[in-house]
Amino acid sequence: MNPSAAAQYGAYRQTQIQSASPVELVVMLYRGAIRFTKVGIDGVNRRDVPAAHNGFVRAQDIVSELATTLDFERGGEVAEQLSAIYAFVMKLLLEANVRKSVTPAEHAVRSLESLLSSWEQLSRAQKSSSATALRAS
Image 1 (cartoon, rainbow, N blue to C red):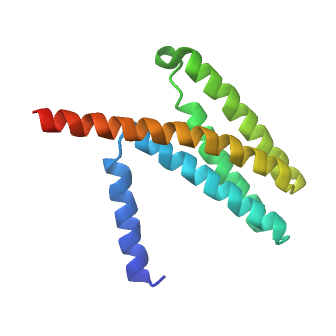
Image 2: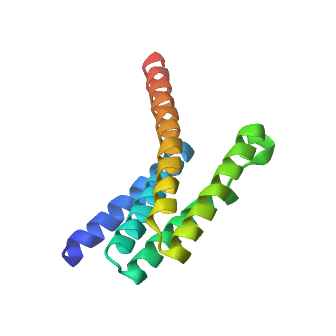
Image 3: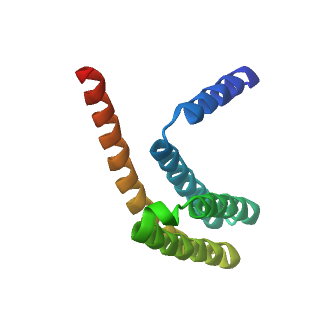
């Protein structure tokens, strides 16, 4: 990608992030965690230790961010369950990174994809209700 295209893409992504709803931001974080876990898996498969390490660490950073932003007062039992899932995914990512093993990383991807699906449904529902409200006004 040439420098101009990279700058344009960066500006586009920044605008996308700044204009996203909180639910859309969570969806972006899940997608990022899944993408970087897959980068780590690819690194393991290619025996590229630095690429595997970097992919898994970036995925861990995102899952850590998801965990630290949980609101236990408002989220109640759902926040508690998500916290437990995030801790489990972090354990899997750590194991994948330390052992340079694909199996725990694949389990992490499946867990994240399952959660992503739920967040995408919520995002679609919010967009639909917003569009309905706009048409009614």
